[in-house]
Length: 230
Length: 295
Image (cartoon, rainbow over the protein chains, first blue to last red):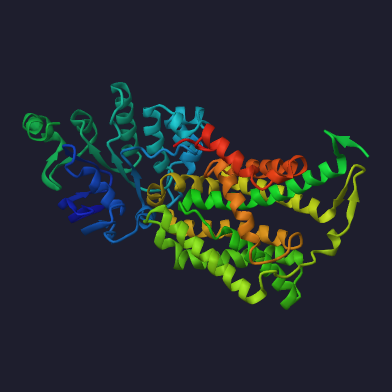
């Protein structure tokens, strides 16, 4: 579904991604694991076209997106949930939810979304940023489920959240996967990732250094902890 | 004669009406400025000149083509909006990635160029425009005489302001604009063509200035400097109301017009500076403006 080859990216003059290679197959949940600053978030932003200077190849359902503007990438059917969650303070919860335009048929209905996230229905009229951190994270994921985008890029959805909320978000992602969405997840939370993902790519210094199927993860945990500090 | 606070009532109400009329224009113009500043981060100094162009287009439609006031109410804003689209695409968009001063200087230059062109063509005293017959005449309200056209301008301004406020605050298009004001990159990643949204917002904002120009044509002398004299006050209104606050721009526009009208009655010498005095006081107490959101 998504094939990334030789992806390089730069912030101004600093070269951050040095030839990322990985792929995500339809229906999978795949993580990018790595230390802070390894280039995981930059990889998601580069796929979305949000990093100006980038080279290599990003193919989504066969179409080359390396030179595409962010709106073209969004229209192609990739939903993005940024690290800072990107909830709009000037918009109510329901306006935040309804903001992203529908890009393809087959997105979840608002009723389905409210069934999955009852808090968002209760607090529809509050300003988006008045929600708790966990609720904001759910809103940020919920609003890209509506649009018909089938590949979701989630950037550290558990960052800064209490364990019980992290568990809820994990269940949500499993539910999303059951409903046929494909997920590319950036994570530092090793245990969280191991409960959701089919495969893990290890990212170091802007490169993929290893790929680990989830069933091998436990056996290799010791070495990974040392190597990645995660 | 009836006296209120030691002043003749007709004088007081007359100035109040004048204040509300001026306030109508402050409100309509500051709305466009606030919308443009919110999304483009450009302080559009050409706004007054585009208001002037709207008035001249109204006059030109009648003078050259025999097209009257009512069609002009639609045609002139469209023409000014189209012109806005042209200057946004060819000039202003190059300033988005630069310091805010560049946009200000560019639009300031545009204002001078437009004024120069119209002064060349029509002289600095300009032309006069009659206005629609159906709105001529005055109403006797008992305590004062109310020219029908002035009542119409106030009514139209209230409708326009409410329409813009409603569009921005209550519709999905407005939500898109508010979101793009906060985080354009994220909105674009959702599949929204943000550069196009920005162009159309600029066009819409200056079309509002054009519309105000149509309403002003029968009221004031249509001359190349008519925008400049108004726009200084309008900038003060935007600053007092709080940059980027739509409701604030409307309320402040009308409010300051009224304050100015009353100052004209009680202490005429201060009427031209009262707005700036209010601005100084407000900025001392609330640096983000009366309705501004502190970032």
